[in-house]
Amino acid sequence: MTTATLFLSDAWTMTRRELAHWARMPWKVVIAIAFPVMMLLMFGYLLGGGRGIEGDYLSYLMPGMLALTMAFGLESTMTAVTRDLNKGVIDRFRSLPMADSAVLVGRSAADMLESAAALLVMTGVGFALGWRWDGGAAGFAAAFGLLLLLRFSMLWIGIHLAMVAGRTELVQAVQILIWPVAFLSTAFAIPAEMPGWLGAAVEWNPLSATATAARDLAGLDTGGSWAADHAALLAVGWPLALLAVFFPLAVKRFRGLGG
View: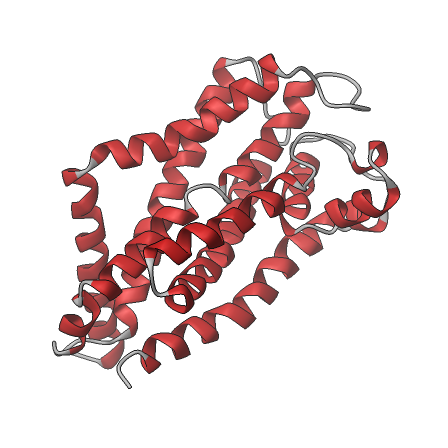
């Protein structure tokens, strides 16, 4: 077998390990998927429409909520990584004849499968609430890809920070940082209705870029600024830039754990 084949086999083995955890604790997956649905219902119906948004608020909200969903659940991945570190599971894996990176790849693959399932559930709920996609099948596939690309980049940030934190208690502190980044975006409101400095920060948020690009693909008019007019470019550029920084940092940190 070639080196690439062995690596893929090892990675699939580690992915199946993570998926086996789903079977033993399905309630964790259910909660992870149900949480963004509850957020959608809360912001869409309990807290009213967004400021300055004309027309159907649900059409604006849904792409934003799909982008926001990609930020939810990172804490479970971070906790799983630190748990394996603290229990010595990583050390046992290192003693086996397998690629070291397969551990991280398996963890990330399982997370991406869960994220894809969450997107499908959220989309189904949106359709049930009356949301309609007007951008065609190709546009929907492109938006889905951009959303998963965002999740993939955020996932490797989480994996790196989990290994830096090292303990579950510290991971909980890191989780607090996720919420401001997630909510300071265009998920619920337009930057024009915010103070100038806040609107600028919100508009250049990677989540905002993906949400705006998804709205564009859905046929909504979200132009008005450079960031909005080039949302698709930023929705690709931001995740790739984050991956370029945090993927090698995570791999380097993981390899250093055995030192």
